[in-house]
Image (cartoon, rainbow, N blue to C red; front, side, top):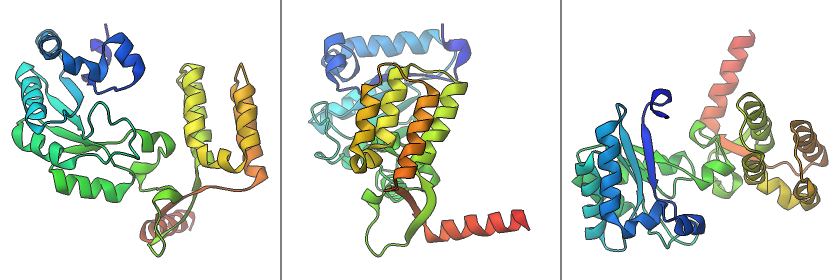
Length: 260
């Protein structure tokens, strides 16, 4: 059904949430590896587009390597490895195991992507250098800061004395851009609500009364959400995004040249 409309099909064997446990999918298929092999084999044999797989690691490295090799042998064209086990759901409590990702990369012939503890572009550089992976993924941080891969970071990851300055961009600006995209490419309102909460988490901590207004809305509209963002801006307590001073200078010079 989806094959004519996509460039590849990805199977998410990494979801550790309770809903995945109830439905027996995601990371809970790690308990039934013959079924996993069958799924990958059937898809790769019957689709004309590549099949990729996203996985979590086992507590034992040997099991993780056997799992990854099995996926490659079954026909996976790419394997993305989240360096946490199924039980390590709290990314702030458990560090991602980049050693395990490196071991998978060294063991496979197909491209390997690294996932876990990618919070900003310095993490991207460090992860690629450490693991040798072909690319990186980000999940929770990207929900909060969709501008991560453009070089922006939140205050949480800015250290005193570093060369990161105010970029002139904040998460409210990202929400406005996101809402415009949602109007153009409709998605369920529950997803819109969830993503707005993620992006405006810092603002809502400063103005919890606005968060409560959002929570009370049984039916959302784009007009209401745009008005909410404007109210936050008017209330103050801006939560800026930061970018390297060299990148800011390049951007400023580019704008000056374009306006000359």
